[in-house]
Length: 168
Image (cartoon, rainbow, N blue to C red; front, side, top):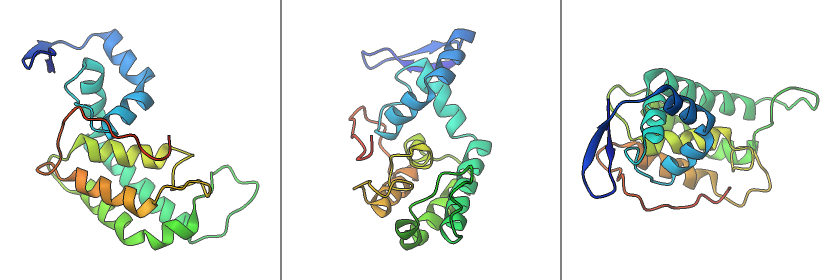
């Protein structure tokens, strides 16, 4: 059972059905962007299901490993015919302290903000974002610091105010 906002300031208990779980998987990228922008994970059953997956220990470990892999990749020569997407090495190397702090927070026990985890997931998976694209005008360090700030469950707000990332 999940408590979902009914739109009138009250919560209703909703049981997740198979079609809800399927919708959460099929629309994961869109839901992740909405959560990263500050949408409430209690707005829909799909958002609640996706938030649960994102904030799971397993998912947080995968994201933390992805951050370390990006740093390692920035410090190794790129092979033109490899299967991996090259990282934006110059920006990444200068942002390594922030990456390591975000890595630490992802691996911290206890609850974290879904917004911060979603921001990290979007950063790691968006090829147009500052982690990968040399054409991105977005500041990688600023994105990392926002995710770090949002990661703290006590400081994070779950408002429905939507802030569009620079790299959509």
